[in-house]
Image (cartoon, rainbow, N blue to C red; front, side, top):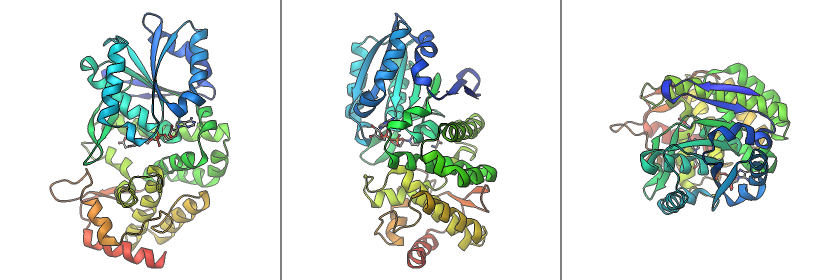
Length: 369
Ligand code: NAD
Ligand code: GLY
């Protein structure tokens, strides 16, 4: 079993990564059960595919499950489902000392984390992520949220879990398109500051996406090590270090907005195309070797991820996409910080980006892409 510690003083916690961990979760989670019971929140897809494994291992450890099963999909990160979840937790008489288990992807993790942060002014929660995106990104670091009419993730809190338990084998039931979208967040860590990991991704992405357990476990472990170090350094995204995790997200957010935050473009797919655009824009500014931007574009193409406006199914022009960026929650006193790169593994935060220039770049990139 790999163990990664998120070092945050009194809020420190472990991330445990092991193939088959869900079948041994009874042992791991029994110490967190009070009165012989754990409340497990999940969605209907995960309930069908993975909950029986958790149920069996908890039963073997004499721990009863109180399951709460929510509908799958982004719309579950809403006031309505938050209220439904809080009412269900209160009906189960969850106390401040209890640990709620979030079994699922980023939707369940973000919603349960937020509910835990406000239930009785805060109870504990444990992340058991079941998508690649959640295993390498959203289950670690304590960002919790629901969506508002005005935009995604606009209502939430920083609230760290007590434990993250990752079983790569849960990905066996995840649709390949979802795994691929989560893979964009894996390759992101190489692009930020780890060129050797990018090279590993280039060589091993096919094995990882084909379900090779060693490749999955290695990629997840290396990703959470990177994220844990960044979060320990800048938990609340104040120093700029944690903002590096938003590589590709400003372009990606605009692409997601143009496609209506729908199944046309999954979040990770938007991030993939957004990272390729950030690298090509950096090359156009003369900051990054064109060869590095091309290497990233080729890699994303090879794994089947979107890498430009056309493959992201985006129809809007540059000005319209920049219009979407103006609603980005990272806007700060009229400027939008951008993640740019000096090369693979050399991402940095720039506050000097001229949005009209970005619009012109997007139009030119569509023509030459
Ligand atoms: P998701 O939770 O919607 O899961 C994707 C789909 O896969 C859903 O239909 C789900 O039911 C299904 N699923 C999950 N696990 C499965 C499994 N093992 N087998 C079969 N089906 C399974 O989406 P996601 O991509 O995991 O997360 C996206 C969310 O994460 C977004 O709301 C995003 O805002 C959030 N996010 C949060 C952070 C953070 O730091 N908190 C970071 C990145 C993204
Ligand atoms: N996914 C970005 C962050 O956790 O900060």
